[in-house]
Structures are given as structure tokens and as C-alpha cells.
Length: 195
Image 1 (tube, rainbow, N blue to C red):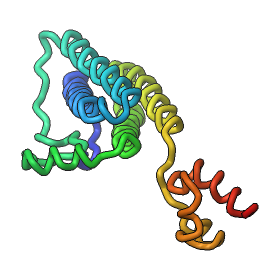
Image 2 (cartoon, rainbow, N blue to C red; image 1 turned 135 degrees about the vertical axis):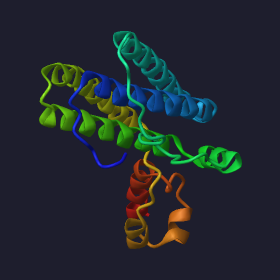
Image 3 (cartoon, one colour; image 1 turned 180 degrees about the horizontal axis):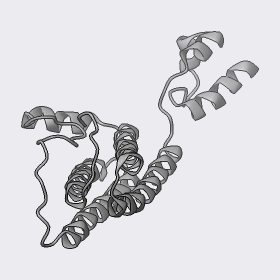
């Protein structure tokens, strides 16, 4: 997102809101496709979020009927691709992306959208814009909460190398199953203490 400017008209606000919703829905749709075989629960969350995003963009479009909506710079709200992506590179990135990484990207984007709506509420002089921004702000807060809950359910695959070496190093730890995940690693390290 470029430097945030002041939004002082409903048409300008709608332009930003539609762009934010469409970008989110398109990314969620891509994430859902990539996660369906690896993380069905995460894929289902992304599918629901994509459906809600597209519905929300249509709802905004309906509210904006008869209003001339200004055009925004292409890619202003892009999550990943600032220009036309190389198709193979784009696909490769999505194939390598873990469910945790996809959720972190989505969480970052939702927080960025929330900051935008907070900025609009603080800086606009238009009461109608402020009122609409407040509604969007609440929805972004709900989206952030959903992403955080989903992240909390996933195992953290980060290795705690300091702990592993404190307990004898990777060769000794390799004898213990599940050392690769923090939760499993804690159990394994507990077993190492007793060994």
C-alpha cells in the first residue's frame, strides 16, 4: 500500500474498500486452492473468507450504485504481486507456502486493512465516511481474530536449536521422535532429560 492519504468522500472510500475486499477475496481463493490437500481446515477458512470478501465487494458495489467511483493505482492493495507475476514463479511460491505462512500473510494484510480504516476514521472530515469506516474497522477486527485463532491451532514447526544443543545436540535429539515441532520438541526434550 502506498503512503496513506486522507479520504474525504464516500466515492473515494468505496474505491479503497472495494479494492481491499477484492484483493483479499482473490488471495483467499488462491490460498484455499493451495491448502485443500495439505491443510483442509485452513483451506475451509480461506474459502469462507473468499466468499465473504466477494460478497462484501458486491455489497459495497450495490451501495455505490449511481456513484462515480475513482480509479486507484494498480496494485495499491496487492498482498504478494506488485506487477504481473511470472506464472511459474507465482505457482512455485504458492506450492512452497505452508498453512502457517499463508495465515501470517493473511493476518498481515488484515492488519494493514484495519490500519487503513483506522486512519480514515482519524483523518476524514466527512461524517458519512467516518460512519462507514467504523463498520469496516469492526469487520477487520473480526477477520484478524479469525486468523489469530487459526494460527493458534497450527503446530509451530520452528526448531529451538538452543534447547536441542543444550540437551546434547541434534544427534542425540534425533533418537527422539517429534523433535522438529516445538510442542513435540518439548516432549522430546523432556524425555532427553530423563535419558
